[in-house]
Length: 97
Image (cartoon, rainbow, N blue to C red; front, side, top):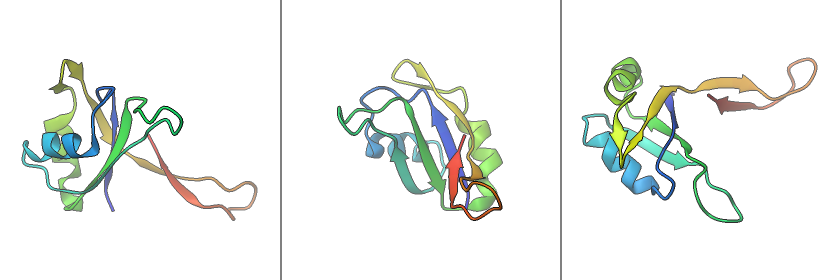
């Protein structure tokens, strides 16, 4: 499963708006998740986009990284899987930048 990590997403951007922005550039998405502050309900300017086609990740980064969305320069890179368990590998996996 290929996920992209997006940084510098406009403050009040919706998941749907980010999806439309990505797909308008020819990149098919499976899911979008902008990380939000649970108290305020706003984005701290980062999120994840899962691609439909795992082979499209390098192309997607090339197409999307450094492009502007509402006067914000969007930074895009492949999300990394990282173990969160302590000690001998008994933890869960989570995606990080």
